[in-house]
Amino acid sequence: MNSPSALPIVQSDTDLAAMFAVQRRAFSGNPLPPAAQRRQWLKSLREALLAGQAELIEAIGQDFEGRSANETLLAELLPSVQGLRHAEKHLQRWMRASRRRVSLAFQPASAQVRYQPLGVVGIIVPWNYPLFLAIGPLTCALAAGNRVMLKLSEATPACGRALKQLLERVFPTDLVSVVLGEVEVGKAFARLPFDHLLFTGATSVGRQVMLAAAHNLTPVTLELGGKSPAIVSADVPLDSAAERIAFGKTLNAGQTCVAPDYVLVPRKRLQAFSDAYQRAVRQLYPRIADNPDYTAIINPYQLQRLQRLLDDARAKGAQVLDIYPDETRQGRRLPPHLLLDVHDDMQVMQDEIFGPLLPLVPYDSLEQALAYINQRPRPLALYYFGYDRAGQEQVLRHTHSGGVCLNDTLLQVAQDDLPFGGIGPSGMGHYHGHDGFLTFSKAKAVLAKQRFNAARLIYPPYGKALQRLVFRLFIG
Image (tube, rainbow, N blue to C red; front, side, top):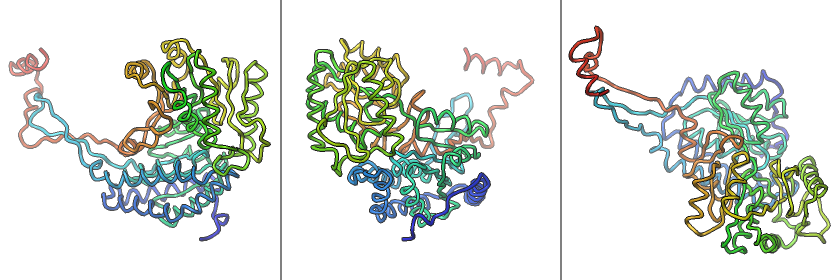
């Protein structure tokens, strides 16, 4: 394997424009790749990921300076490979034209929807899951028959170089090309006249991406984040709820866009849940400092940002509980913390946390908890812990979020047959599985008529008796 550091990095807008032009010409030469060719693309990618998994795990660990290898397997490689298998299995059915009904007034005719590739798709990848959030949308775009350009995060350079090398072994660059580079390269990338652009990242950056895409009227899918709440019901077993919330909050050290951002807990159960959560975290991670199962914060900037959130909360009256108070920190492994007595003036209750800090918010009734959520921007995910079906239905009916998981966390994202996407400040559009195929396809409406033309009955000149009869029959 060649040294990843030898791979070239895009230096200018001209380089990007040239890459885009190559892909546009290649698409023009093969605008509707057959199912067999697309399945081969997906199979080749899947086999390359499996063959190169050791190098990818090592590269991601290098970027984080301490990413759990098992978390990379669980949260990056596993869903990537499963998503590819799902697309391979169902692609033929997804590509099939969909027959539609023609109303009696327009007979004889037939109608169908055909699914065509859009053309050249751009994908901007974040740093928190640099493999899965590249391969997931790439899978959907290739299944739909598109050419793809990926801009990988400057915050994960080792993974970027390794993934670039892997993809260049599998695909010609006129089918899949990988762009590395700093923030200015990313801005230039977003300005290209893609046929569709998918961005995953912070809401603030999503606004800039959408503004750049607007110049070319490029359709966008934005996968953002926000403050995803979890609700603990009045009667759910606390040990079970705490364990599942702890897993969702500590995976990747909380650097997950759908991690529980804060937990709404019945006021009378607040102390008991706090105790149960601390026990659950310590059971998952008996120690933090030198534990290879616990992931580090990606870089010093993010670590300092999280420390500022803690300091601000303390200064404004929060009770901050370090779950590992006797440990000496090593590197960028930030221990999980609980925050009690929080209020809206604290920065930790305003910004997406994106780390292992978990505020607890007391409530007195489920209606009050739902009102609290609904007074805030709509989140990417919502979690409810309670086995009562009436309570579950109340939450589903009276909240808006990108997705919901009942009695667990994160797992809704791993379901290939469910759409993934936000709403409002947490994003727009969706992908994964069939929904991703549709996102990267043009659903072309086709109405077909043959020799006999009943529509002549409504041609001018108007006022004929037969026309009046038609209007009475179909309008009333």
